[in-house]
Amino acid sequence: MRSIKLLRAALAAAMGVAGCVIAVPAFAQNYPSKPIRYIIAFPPGGSNDILARIIGARMTELMGQTVIIDNRPGGGANIGAEAIARAAPDGYTVGNISATHTINATLYPKLSYDVLKDFTPIIKVAEIPLLLAAHPVVPARGPKELIALTKTRKLAYGSSGVGTPGHLAAEMLRGYGAKDLVHVPYKGGGPAGVDLMAGNIELLFNNMPELVPFVKAGKMRAIAVTSVKRDPVLPDTVTMIEAGFPGFDLGNWVAIVGPANIPKDVVSKLNAEINRILREPATRDKIAAQGFNITTSTPDELAAFIRSEYDKWGKLVKVSGAKVE
Image (cartoon, rainbow, N blue to C red):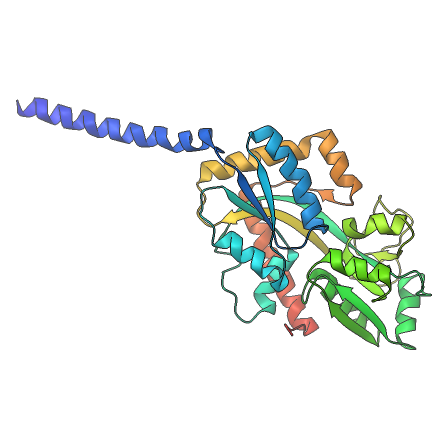
């Protein structure tokens, strides 16, 4: 009788283990079963927003659930990042982060979240060259002319926020001889671009996708790009390095993350679906036409990349002396 009871107990335990094994992949198999919230830490019209809407639309079509774009601008992208970090770790809240995310770790003396620990890396989706653009009335046609102009008059430049890549790139100009530059921070690249076209500011270092349509329309002038090579979207625009500024190789990037501790099978499914989207020729063409350089990654590769960016931008913030005002 004792042996029968032991056998029954062993079978029950085995069935319990089997149930657990089956339950884990079943969650991913049923995912998503409701809409996914996609948080953007910048206003509509910016690079993060543009890219999210392209990817989100295809996710809706391929995954069978609506992807809702949720813009949470302000606070130097901290408001959006905090919303991601504080969400339930079930895969139904994701969001874009960019170089600003890793910059903020050094720029802000105290954040309500940990840049490295409070997020689940999902996939890196794009790299973005920065473009230095000017209002058409600014007489400079190249970076050296522009720097010479700052020695004779005051020039106001905009950015998508204090400590953003565009802000730090503009501040780097001082190291190459620029003198009278006045920083005007905005809550995102979209509003900054509008003010540049209106003539309220004269210069803007910003993500290329946000400025290219206006450059092509003649509403602003492209001065230079920060990539190592010229960008095919604006092939006649010189690079900062080419114009005689060695080491001026700065760029932005976009990655998709979620709150910490999302189940690994859900992360794998999201990574696979977004990789699939980024491999589609039509989607690639649409994204590339906006000025993005498409990239992909595994979650582990993204985690390593975020760590390296954290170290790189942290050093640059300290050298630049940039501070939250």
